[in-house]
Image 1 (cartoon, rainbow, N blue to C red):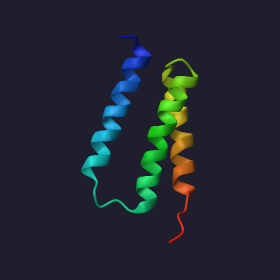
Image 2 (image 1 turned 30 degrees about the vertical axis):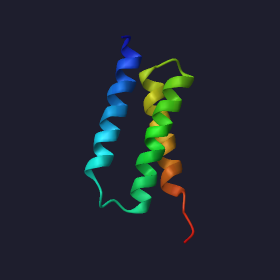
Image 3 (image 1 turned 45 degrees about the horizontal axis):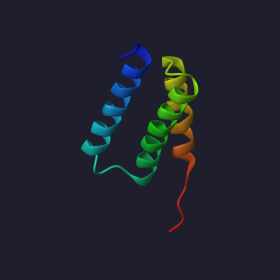
Image 4 (image 1 turned 180 degrees about the vertical axis):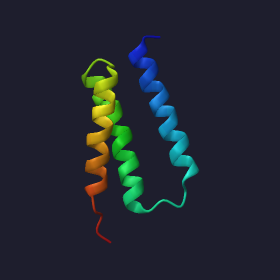
Length: 72
């Protein structure tokens, strides 16, 4: 397994475990975590598995997820 794919797999596993452990997260926290996870995967795919692309995608996705507001 190449280094980029290993980094992506480790990040995805960490995010999944982190999300399952935090059942009392607020809606904004959940959106931030989901956005970061989706951004990490997207950034990794777009940059061919580079670590910088994965981290950059996670940051951008987290910020976008944090700003999403669902109407009730």
